[in-house]
Each structure stands twice: as structure tokens, then as C-alpha cells.
Length: 359
Image 1 (cartoon, rainbow, N blue to C red):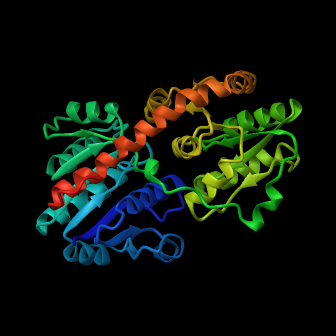
Image 2 (cartoon, one colour):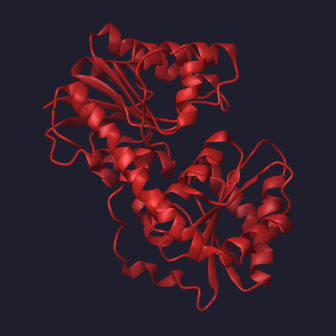
């Protein structure tokens, strides 16, 4: 048995990152590891996932948790990037340094590396990966990024650990209100960008076009802090008529609801991943190379966000629906492949910890 400390953007209201946590912890199966999570909301992490955690911003408690563990494991996510802030890279580098100073193993799994634009962001990320005992990335592009940063260690190309999520929850009584009659259901997982109303205008008008053409748009909140105000804005532009999925505590709840949709429009990467896990095709809207990479891996339609108009987005969605059966047929073997690749993360963990079993 090993004492594992899991680090990432967990318990911070982002269902994509929590899907990584749940997928990873569930895939451990009957391995008798003792798990502690660095979480932004320890009480919620235990309530929703039954995992013990400590506050990720309480650096004294974090230091004690590092001392008590055998290995610090980063199960995945886009945590080594400096688009939002270089502080993210520095925070995770500080955890790596503390762990190595305490003689602990550092295991980086399912990593989506970048974008890294600043000199310090690149330097800090390179330092963290060079100090690691094992590295697995979720896509070939992330491996290329690390090689360009001068990381010469062995790198395993795996997949996002969210693909290891257990089957979604069964239908619950309180879901009865989520019926949309005979209308084709179109999920929308947008995310805000910068200042101004451009994103709300884009998806507000797209929702209106969907309504007019007998589609029922459903707004999906993947990040509680960021997406809520945007969803409110989009809904206001449509007279409050657009149903939404908000304040879901578990990624499995989103999976369950996605399984009832016909297709989704996704800016959020993990909205696309969660949809794929339940066989629902996504029209990806790319704002970042990681979204484009995912769409390519899954052979999904993809549009660049820059310069996108509501009419172009709606027409692309209609085309997606027209080809839905073919897209699903192509997607299923690729989803199965991503599951197998994601298991490489667990196999690598076993190897580093000295467990010879097969994942």
C-alpha cells in the first residue's frame, strides 16, 4: 500500500477536473492505496467523491500532507499552462519541489501541457517535468511541447483520465423535469472569454436559431464560477426560455443528462469528453490547441472560435446532426482506444510504485 497525495485543480468547481479525479481514483480499483486530495473545497470533495482531502491553499497543511505521503500524483488536466495566469505553473512547481525535497516520488499522469507563452511559465513547467519520476501526457502534442522545452525523460503518451469514469448514474426521480418533448436536444457548453458580450451574443443567438428550427438548447455549466454568469446572460437574451444544467456536484450527473441529448456544441474540452463517454457526438468549438487535438483524436467536427458567427455555428450543428449516425460510428472505436490509452496512466503508476499488476 502506498500513501498517495493527488494534486490538480480539484474541488474548485470545475467538473472537468473533478472528472479526472473520479476517473483516476475509480480506475485504481482494489489497489489498497491510501488517497488524500489537495482540494479547493475539502468538504465537497468528501461529500461528492468520498475522498479525504486538505485545503489546497493552506500551504502548511499541504506541506504536512506531502511529508506524510509516499508519492505526489498529478492525475491530469491542463494545470501546466500560463494562459489564465503563470501562477498556476508556479503553484504546481512548488508542490513538485517540496515533494522532491522531502524525498517523495513525483508522478505526472494524463497531462495536457500548455499553452505556455511566457518565459517563466516555460521555465517553471520544464523544471517541474524534469524533476518528475514518471511522466504521461494525454495527447501527442503535449509530448512535443515537453520535448521542445528540453525535457529529455521518457514520456508515455496516454489519454485523459476522465475517460476512466465509471458508468453514469441511473435516472433519478428529480430528473423528471428535464423532459423536452419531441424536440431534438442540443447541449451547449460555452465558456467566457475576456471582456465584453461577444460570447454571450454568439451563443445567445445560436440558441435562438436552434429554437426556431425545432431544437431544444440546454445550457451546460461545467465550471461553477465561470459559466454561471454567462449562462444567465445567454438565457436572458432568450427571454429565460433556455433550460440549463447548473450546480451539479458530480461529473457523473452531467454524464447522465448528456446521455439523454442528441448532440452538443462544446467549447469546454471536458464537456466533449463526457459526451463521448456516453456516446453523444460533440461539435467542438476550439479556442485552444487542446480542443483541436481532442476533436482530431475523436474524429469530431470542429470550428475555430475566432471569427465564428451564430449562423455558421448553427449550420455546422445542422450538418453534425445530419451526419450524427456516421459520427457516432466513427467515435465509438476511438473512445474505446482512449479508454485503453488512459489505462496506461494506471500502469505507469503501478510501475513506479513497484506493483507489477496489469492495469
